[in-house]
Image (spheres, rainbow, N blue to C red):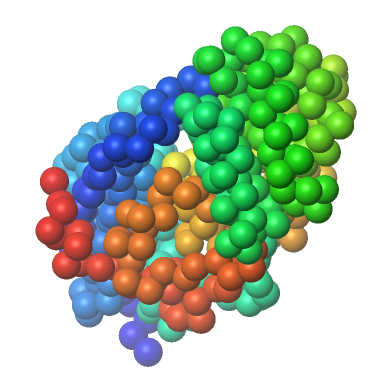
Length: 369
Ligand SMILES: [Mg+2]
């Protein structure tokens, strides 16, 4: 086997997709979603890819990778994920401590891990130390812009299609009416019965006191966790929330790197940490984040991008499950040719090298911006 591999080519593709449906949560309306796809090719023609995704800012991420990261990737050994991550962390530190810079680094890092798997001819979960168990997955949708009836119908559809874990949005009227939220949760609980696991997502809409009030009012509906009841950067507020209710607190989809997660756990501001490896710094950083959550005996439940996270969840014993955002189903099924789909609330890891996914380059090139 050739032991020396060098990155010879970096390609970046941006695919965006308008959202015409009425998808609004407590704090924003979704108008566009899209993927930024990084393809790294070695000097002997082996290709790995990684992704990040966006509602806004995909163009900037693409430019950052092409203009600033590309020259520093050419000639590198793809196995040096740790060194390459640290190089970019230092090189780009002045322009991004969170946000788009880390979206770019995440996509590059995931591509490196995919490439390692392709070169070694091993699935990523094996390289990470996981096993090919079936992984629980929950359905995620139920926007605050829905009428009560639309909400109940969508959640019932999730259950009818085999999910026994569901998540939907709270924070109607931009978070100004928690009594309506309680009513909506009660309606869903009545409709799905006692055996379906329900999670709620408030998308940053309340202060700690309102979040506590809501959590305590909705307790009788048996909720697995409440997500982002407080602005994600209000770590003291998240901590106050936890002191006022025994409802488990999930947060972290807007947190970046091990440093962000360190601050969350030191402030006792999460029970379930939900970082997203396609934004927080890739596989390299997510392994460290998962280790921090293990050390604090917290749960790890990565946000969205279930086809990427499936490998990570397989390798983390304190990981709960995957999240499947219904909003992303259509574009994801077009981006990949062979995307695994849930079966009765579980996903099965593709036993193919790397991420085990094949890009649909015909679709990507047709839609590319
Ligand atoms: Mg969320």
